[in-house]
Length: 214
Image (cartoon, rainbow, N blue to C red; front, side, top):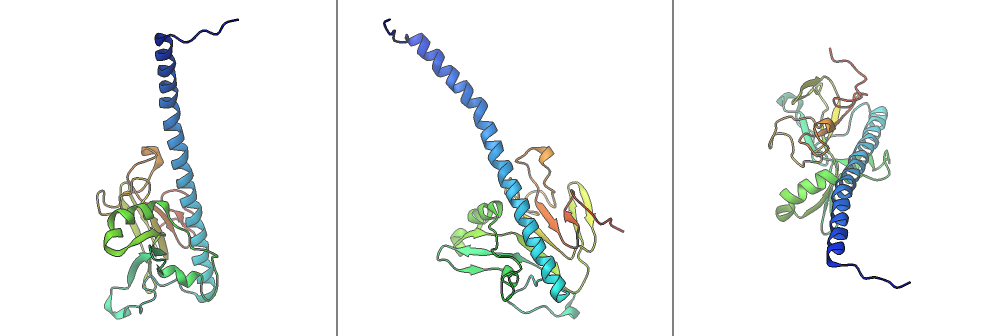
């Protein structure tokens, strides 16, 4: 039986079918990858949160957001601080308040890199500071109850102890474009809003809250 070559018309049809299949498959692939990144971010937030709670269990205070610098004067009224859990530079230098969770007691074996915060800082601080990777943002007030509020949607949590923050898939940090936006995948997998993990058993902001606000 002889083998017939495809005509030009048949080849065009075949190419069109392949393009159509790719157009259907690629968005699903991109969405699956993004879901994996979001899931990893949330899992790593839980790990850092568990380490912070273990630290609190031993010391009756949460890690300082000002580390390695000194704590502010409680009388000043400005006692809340915010800094990255971890930052890495191109030459291998490490900094961040997360060292308190690994030394001298290893409450966590390794400080995770946040995919979203790393991409954000690469776009905003690499040229100036040489950063190539970042962990979550960490905010705490060791002297006063810490309250977190976002505007979209308007939501409050009282006395959270600390919170971890990731800029989320849109790579837009709070106050830069949409003040206080809370990430919600029902608005679209890649939508504005930050991901927050709260201390004292509150969990993810707007999701698995276990403590009712007063």
